[in-house]
Image (cartoon, rainbow, N blue to C red; front, side, top):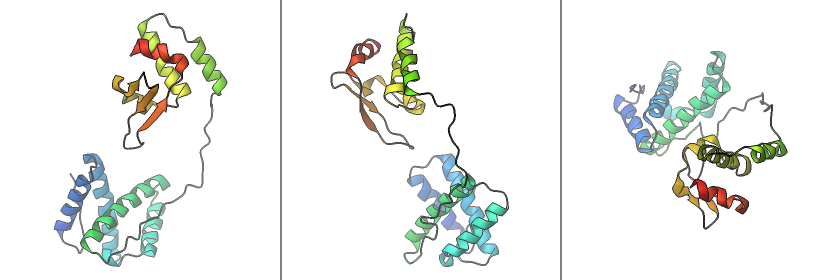
Length: 200
């Protein structure tokens, strides 16, 4: 894993930051990326002769401008800002008087992507109704299709779904949480009760 370089603060602080991220439960690759981005930020602070404890909101904006001028996308700049927010949250544990100039700083994209090719609910429902079932595999696929059409379950959530998450008697479906979404309980339509029962 890349060693985080911490100018003017001593090398041990970089290792402590890495441990801090690990204790927060971040994956190894995420810890590496945060350390890498923070290393870039701290090196820039050193070139500007700014101590991390003296870094201000305006200093951070200057760094953001430099990143944009070097060709970083808004999405990438926001990822780097997230790493810097983690760094200052960690730094505040070591220095109670330190501020977090990155708190609340996010760049907004000027362009919004419009989703194209959206299928209407009526067409989705017709697709579900016309889906043929001649064997267990097709029955399973129709159940999955019903979760997508009627319950709004994402493909990522489907990957984490297990038989124990289906509560037939209660008429409920438990969608397990992940790093990107919270756990949720969904009611399923009683009209498909026997379909669920046969598949599970």
